[in-house]
Image 1 (spheres, rainbow, N blue to C red):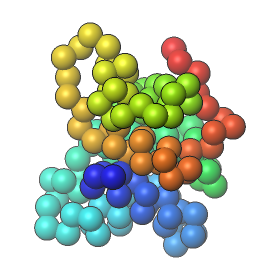
Image 2: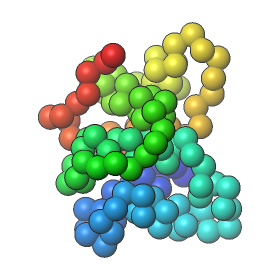
Image 3: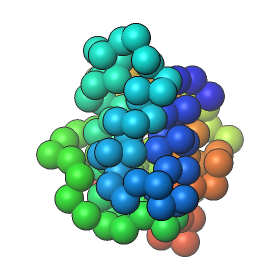
Image 4: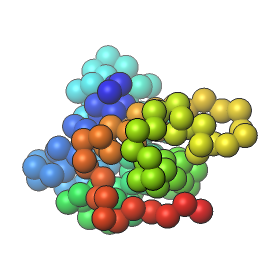
Length: 133
């Protein structure tokens, strides 16, 4: 688990323990803990938007659906990755990204770290998996 996965894990733990009731706030608190000396790392949009997109549609256990992000692409990447993991939970972050992004030549920016960590920690509601589009 890399740093953005650690942020996602900690954010869910904050939400589930009711220490925080908003995914955006939970991400900010967790990011501050993991990156105390780097504001650019704390505010990096791609992993944060992926996390918030997963929360938005209610795919995190015990986190209510809501409007948490304006990002469409990062949310889409995350939801597609969850669907892929449902078919093959052993996919690596690189394999996930390659399947999610297809022929585009883009590097992932922490999105798959977030998804893979949440999946591996069983924070994704596996009875409520999005279908591939």
